[in-house]
Image (cartoon, rainbow, N blue to C red; front, side):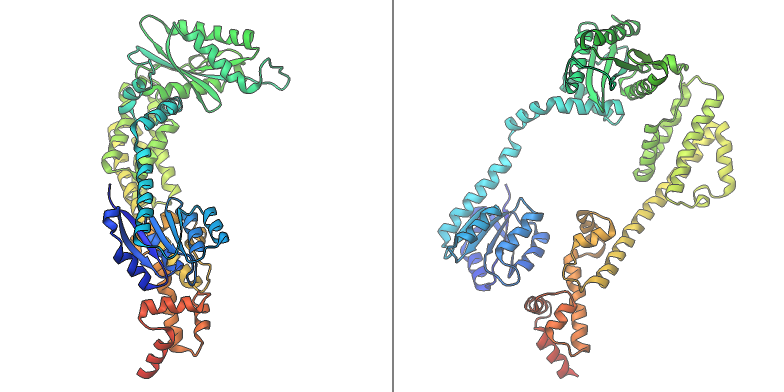
Length: 537
């Protein structure tokens, strides 16, 4: 375990140095990563240094220890805080307790007492880490959450977002026995509800009862997985050599009848196309959802088979919503290799599909249309993407020539990716420039904070702080302080304003704190700085 990081806060420099000098920090398991004279400075250093523990005096100028604790608690609730106080006052102690202070220590404190307290803090930190890493505890928690994890995985599987490489290990881990089948079929069960319906059970218990009845009916006949998805119940049935899809069809009809007889509710079951690879179960699931959508047309209270309402050949070729999402994502964020793999995968489907030529053309046109919409969404220059308007026409005409069409689209996708990455970098720089301009316009407002700025920019503070430091090389607080002090220097040089007036003009409500920050930056107080400049002139 590495050393825990401590920030020491006290307005008396001798006290800070004395504590730092006298304590055997490494032996206690700590390192002092910084110190501060007051709460305002401490807040800046907490953001920069990310300490595990803050030790602070309770009485300090500009911002006292309790106010500092409150601010730290709001943004960094995991930091341990120790407060030194020379006041044996119940009200102070009560406020400290409300703020979840780790220790409230009365002065004077000796080395032995502080060492004992820090030892307890270290043990507490280590115990917390140990608990979070404890294998038995984690295993118990994992087993407790296993049903939830199982449901989440199955939902990802039917939505097509599960990692196919980890699919088999996950199914085995969760005890889902549907591997090594001849085919798989997804079915989606919808419980019908009407206004006039009188229920024998409370409505919230009906889906649970339906799910139990379905499980009892399938058990012993089919290997299956059943889980809740959105407002429906989904079943993945494995079709083996010992059972058939026709048999499943009969069983689903019987389940609908039993639900009406036993539970007095109607259920409609959408049944999708079968698939020969479990990794393609998302297509079966989507077609089951499509089948369920026909219940307003063909009626409720029975199974609806996608083959009956949308009869198509074995080689159905379709560029679906999931395909579009994946293509858009890889063009926006992928590497050239991933873009190439994605486009090749889309067009590989055409090799096996046994469909009419027009369906090939519709499929290719759908892919091209997806890319064109993406260009329009991001306002990309069509001529730059296609080289010329003529090439745009050639691409559309190329749907009659598959090989050429694939190569042309891949080239265009690379260009789109390159331009979008460049624009993303430009956008970040524009945002940082806008932030700088906002700071220059509003630095005189004492309440100006990163949260205020981010509301204006419509960004999260965490993301903004990261990109701001990356682009400027300094934290937001440091940049704001620099802008304020440069303006203060300008006012000291060019006006006869009093120091307290200048402090207010550059965003400091307290003259003393302004003087403290100024002296820390320039080595002299604002008054002496002005005097020095006058002597030079």
